[in-house]
Image (cartoon, rainbow over all chains, first blue to last red; front, side, top):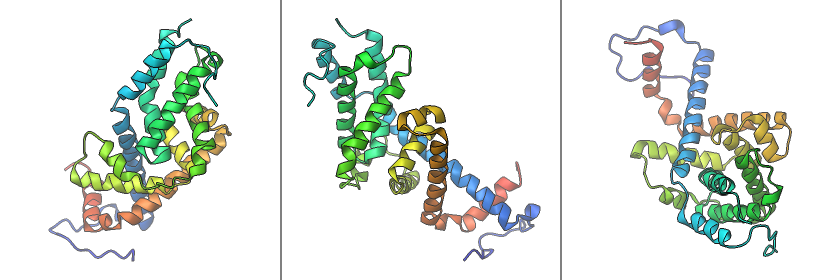
Length: 77
Length: 183
C-alpha cells in the first residue's frame, strides 16, 4: 500500500531530489501532520475565543454585582 | 463590599478561552456555556479563596475542569456528536476545502480520551505551560507531557488515515516543491 505509483504530471522534474528515503519521507510527513494539528488546534480554539463574551455572561456578572459579594454559597446546593 | 473591578474584569476576560476549553471538553456549545456559567458562579462564591496576583485564568480553568470531571463526566457525552451545533455557532464559516479538514480535525479530536484532549488543549491552544497545565489537572508535569505526546501521536494517526487520499500524487508534488527549495 505504501508503494507509490509515479502518477501525475511528470514533465522534466522526475529527478529524485535528495534521494528521499522512506524514513525521511515519513519524518517529513509526520512533521507536516504535526504542524497541521497545531494549526487546526489553535484555529478551532480561536474561532470560539474570537466570539468574545456572550451577553449571557455579561448579564450574569452584572446580576451578581447587584448582589452582595461574600454571600458564600448561599444559593449553592 | 463590592468586587474589585480588576478581579471582575479578569473573570470576564477569561470567558472567551473558558468557553473554547469547555467546548473542546463537552463537544457541545450549549452544555459548554452552562459549564462556564457554573464556573463563574462557583468562582464568585469563592472569590475570597482566590489569591490576588496569581493567575486568574488558571484558577478558573481549574474550577471548570473539576466541575466537568465531577458532574458532566457522569453524563458521558451522550450527545457526543455536537459537531453540528458547534459548526453553527461559528460566525465565520471557513472555506469549503478547509472546512472539511476542520470537521475531520474536530472528529479526530473528539476520539481522544478526555485526559489527553484536555492536556493537548491546555498546552497547545490555551497557551498554558506544562507546569500550569499540571496544576489545572492536578497531576505531575511528566504526566501532562506524556498525555500531550500521546494525544499528538494519536491525532496524527487518525488524521493520516482520514486524509489518506491527500497523500497521493498531490502530496508527492508538494514534497518536490518544498524539497527543492525556492523556485
